[in-house]
Image 1 (cartoon, one colour):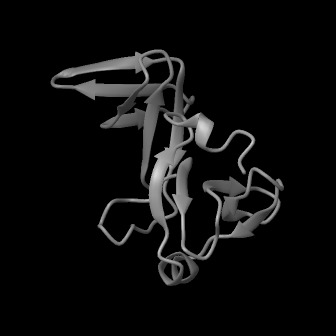
Image 2 (image 1 turned 90 degrees about the horizontal axis):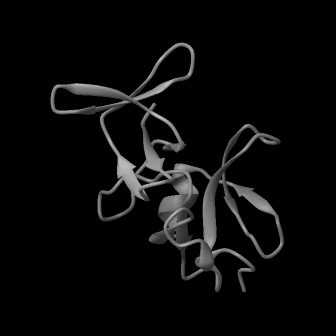
Length: 121
């Protein structure tokens, strides 16, 4: 499973992270391993955009099929990754095939660009 973390205080992405059995998050920088607090983990559904970058939870995406932004999320009610329409509150299951067919492009991330999804039009 691929994941990365967002440091909410510093507003930066952290890579080279480790999660302990008790849920603590560690960040490795050089030879140093430090516990990080106030971070949010985001997971990948396991596929990539057409440009080769990895898709992650919280990505804000757009497709020519829709005239609004959608957020990649995990929907526990259907136990899978989904696309969330913030305007309606509805989700639709996200599969690799549908993602590729609709040629979604990343236009932002919920942590970095919350204005792109709040009260989405």
